[in-house]
Image (tube, rainbow, N blue to C red; front, top):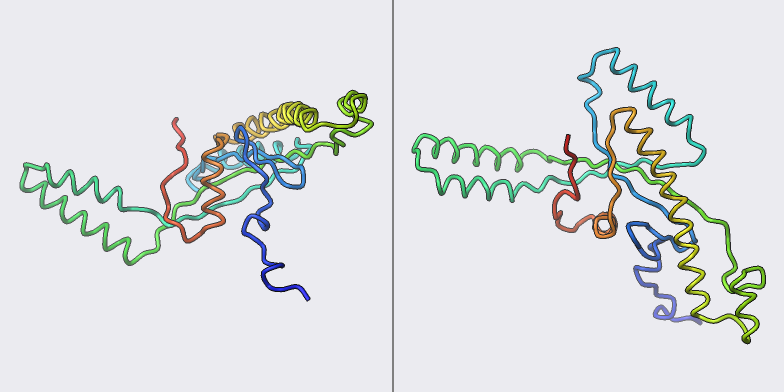
Length: 223
């Protein structure tokens, strides 16, 4: 009979990610993906004609895709303490008595507002996946496998070389998909930026650790 210790699994066993390399998320099942952070747009403030134009562009974008993508929204509790600290520094250096009073009152107002209201910030992401064809590394059908078989079987070095070569090819295919997605969303007025390795790690850390302290915004968009 198996003991509880023998069937106990680590947290990593439940995470589908193998590694994050060059900003690309490599999954344990062989798939790879890029994560794009997307800007928001205030659709309600646009005129009827502008709204119709956005919807048409977005519809055309979706209809043009021959691969699947995923949209998801992440909500985070707004971290207001760095902003309050900057206000405290302003108050400390303020020489005008009236402005000092107003700054102090404003700090108290912000603190009471945050305490009474659950203010969250939303982040919008687009997942662009690519699933390469299954390759038998070092197998008889592989050119690397045929060469290595002449020397008594596959080697770790040969497998690593082929894996690196496959990664470069798959990365190129994925980047082409990303370019299509970015161009399509841009036509609808939505800016996107690809998350780097550290940014992707931070995002997944926060997703898998929702109780962790928010370290701030991953990146920003400029006009």
